[in-house]
Length: 178
Image 1 (tube, rainbow, N blue to C red):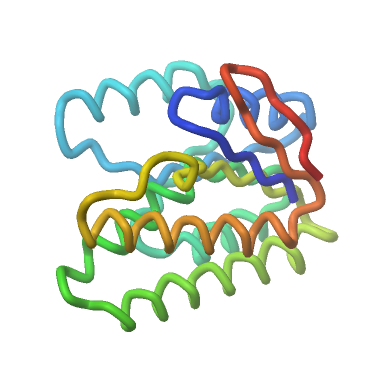
Image 2 (image 1 turned 60 degrees about the vertical axis):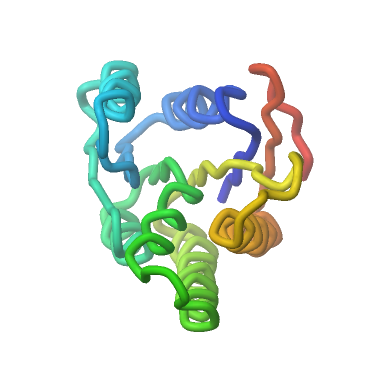
């Protein structure tokens, strides 16, 4: 399993796509973003144009572990882009004031995902996870943004801990951390 993190527009997705191409074979690209507005639609379209046509794309907004499990059953490489968008989807689906329920939901999803990535990728395939590093900036000024930052930070720690390789992308340059 490979875990790739970094800031916005740091080169995470490009690195993940390059590693998937280099590995060869079947690639399942699991996308977590929804086009909620025109700008996000343009971003998604840009990602689609970059991907080789032979890659299978699966959209997973609300059951990422299930999508990863299904993709791993077919072997090959599974590329997830991106974990923090998925966490945002979970956060927004729960509504304000969900507190501990939300934390339990996200922690449970990340435990399940980590377990799948470790156990299933050992013999059946390779997993590449992309996630934003959101904890290097200022402390957000509102509760929702702080909850998101904390949930994403814990998720990143959990998945990086079980990864075989971890990369931090900075200004388009990948730095191997683990």
